[in-house]
Every structure is written in structure tokens, then in C-alpha cells.
Length: 547
Image (cartoon, rainbow, N blue to C red; front, side, top):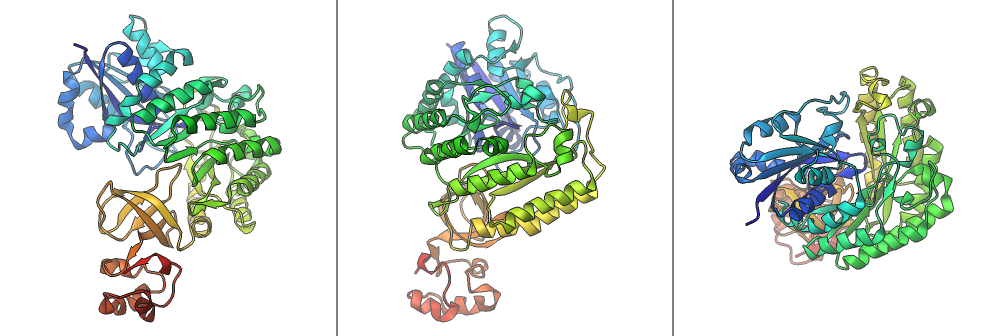
């Protein structure tokens, strides 16, 4: 009888990898495959499940082996889950007494509670071994009697990614699980040292997975019910398979082959999105980048986001931190992505840029924030769209230049002002541009139930929808946009059940507002649209009304 091993998912978030629900990281799946290869029956548990039910510790105690994956090197705010804290990791190490315990993942680079703090490398007590390097390879080496260290080797991990694909069926969000797909590890910008704050250069120069291996993994995941995929585990999707050099030109034929193979391997997929895209790659190689973007758009699903690591619009900060792109190059990349991806399908743009700003870097001054604001105002004035603007304070890790050279704590007041400027002056008009009233969002999954329910589509940086109707958690609806917040939209179920909407939701009907709520409620039920219009007037969502 095979021994039982458990994987405890503490979640990961790196510059080029996301594993916070509904995402599941490649690490989990390859570790599962390695355990299966050693004859284990594999159980899976998330840190959130353990928080909600501490008695699940008993399941872990019955196992012969516990492998925990954890570590955040990019600070973020999450709706679907909360990454394991260092305190929780230590507690698990001491509370779980039955099995041998191993831990690995980016937690090896250090830990910080939030952005704006230095990450500190600490000894994590209570575990039998710390897996350094690639977790699945380190685990395999440990189980064969060697040290718990391992270097990435796709010839070893590719078969495990297939064998371990079934682990997704144990995910608490299944089948609404976003499978983060790895196509590369390491960063070509690392040739010159990489960006001062980034941990991706720790993995060395890029190593690329071959297309048949990716396709085989996707086919295996699809066979286990996966319908949602993001080609996100790489620092620049446009550089996939590209030549050597710090800013290699995209090879559109390889991008086409990769995305075509994924589509063929999972013909009934519901989501296929991307993540990191280096704006400098686009600005330096416009023609090749356009062809590569078109290849992605031919095969992906709409509502996609190309995340640009802009970091700053200040040329002095770019130089001081060896960043990838100057502001004018980022602006040009935004233009190109808008031109190629701005067309709507299923009511939303095909592909838009997302901007990341990192504050507290070396060379930053008060003027840095002026330049950031001027850049965003320029984008808005030019009529361009960006899906979202992320702002964070640097989380410096030992071994990166930012660990010893940064400006943390020096401009806190200006940092807060910048965030307020973006939320009030940029985010709102951008949301109005990207999600105008009447936009129907398909397949919104309710993640928080209440008088105001919250849901999101599956995807890369999906918009948060607040729906003033109590809806069951995990239910899936279509929703129509009726208003906007700073970083979210207000929506109603589509088609809109006018006669049964709760009173608190009536005021969100376009043209109704607080003034006509009582009149609408008094005249319900309406026989048809004409009767409703006599009270509420015409609106942009009339064709979505249900009587």
C-alpha cells in the first residue's frame, strides 16, 4: 500500500509566478508528480483550509511526508486567499508531528510582512529539511537519499507536471482553478544585473520549456477538468524562445506555435491569458512584437492583460536601478498594445496593458512622483486604455541591489498622495473607458456572498464586481456594469430581474438613482419595458431588462 504524502500550499507570489487562489502554481503540480513517482498517494491542502479548520492538522499528522510550498517576493492584496505568514509556517512546523516535513519555494529568499519592509532570511524551525533551488528536483533528490537541493531541469520536471496534474481536483476552488503555466525561468535582463529589486535574476539566464512539453501538461490538466490557463510563469512572454541578448527580438512563429499547441491540447478551455510583457521588447522591436501580439490574440480569450513592469517614469530612477524601459518607450508600448488589442470581443477589449509602479527605489525624489503622475495623465489624455495600475512599495531581498540601496521611508507622504491621485484621477476614468455602463461581463464567479456580493471573472487581473444582491458563494452569473468605484465596478445580474431586485439594488439601475427608487418599487411588477420606461425613463441597459 502506498504511503500518503500531503502538499500544504502556503501560496506563492513572485515577479513571474502567481499561486494565490484561484491560481495554482506550477510548483504544486511538479511536487505532486515527484511524490507520485516515488509511490506516494498525494493529498493537497491550502493554508486557508487549515485556518478555517485547524482540525485538518490531524490529516497531516497521519501522513508519512508533508511538503509545504510558500513564499511571497512581490507584495500584493488578494481576494481569493491569504499567503502563509512566517509565524504560521513556524507554527505548522511545530504543530504537525507525525510526518517528515519539508519546506521550499521562494520563502527561501526571505520573508517580509508587506511592501516597504526588507525581507529577512530566517531559519525556519520545525521542518526536517529546507528544499533549496527547484522544489520538485530538491524533493526528488531528498527522497533518493541525497541532499534537499535541486537545480531546475525540465527533462526531470516536465514528466512530473503531467503526472501531478490531477492534484487540481483537490483544490477548494475546483473546477474554477487558474493553472499558471510555466514556459521559462530566469531573466535575460539579468545579463546586466537585472532590475535592482527583482528576484527573478536569482534563477539565472532564461531557460525555456519546449512546446510539446507545455502542450502535454495542458492536455493532462484538461483531462482532469482544467478550463482556465494563464501563460504567466516567465518574465516576458514575447521573448519566449527568442535569441540571446538582453532585449531579444520576439519570434512570432514560436509564439504562434506555443499558443496554437495550448489551444489544441485544451480545445474546450474557457480562459487563456498571459501576464508579464516587457514594454522595452515592444518598443525596440515593433514589427516583431506586433506579429507576436497578433498570434497571442488569435488564440487567447478576450479580457487579457499584458503586465508592464514600468516601475517609474523618472529617468534617474531607471538609471539608478537598471530598470528595463524609459517612460517614452513604455508609452509607445501602450500605444501598440492598444492598437493590436483594443478591439472588443465578448464585450471587453481583447488585450490591454497593465502598469506596475514600484516606489522606494534608489534615486527616488519628490519629483519622481510628479513624473509618474504626468505620465499617467498623458496616457489618459491620449485616449489610451490600461486595464489597471498597480502601485507598491519595494520589498527588498538580500542579494538584490535594492536591499542596500533604496529610499524606503523617505517619501511616505508623497507616496500616499500618488496613490490617491491614481485612484481618483486615473483609475475611475480608465474603468469608465474600459467598462462603460451596459458592458456585460460573462461568467462572473461569486467569491463573497452578502447583501453586497463580490465576484470576478476568471482571468489575468479580472475586474472586481460588487453586486448589490445576495448571491450564493461559488455561483456563476452574467453581470452588467451600472457604475464604477475606484478599482471596481458595480454590476447587476444580467438579464436584470427588475421586478424581483431587492430594494437596495433598485437605486443602481441607470436613470433611477435615489430619486426614483420609491416610484419604481411602488409600481412593480412591471408588465413590460414600456411600463418600466414610463417610470424610470430610457437607459443603456434596457435591452437587458427581464420582466
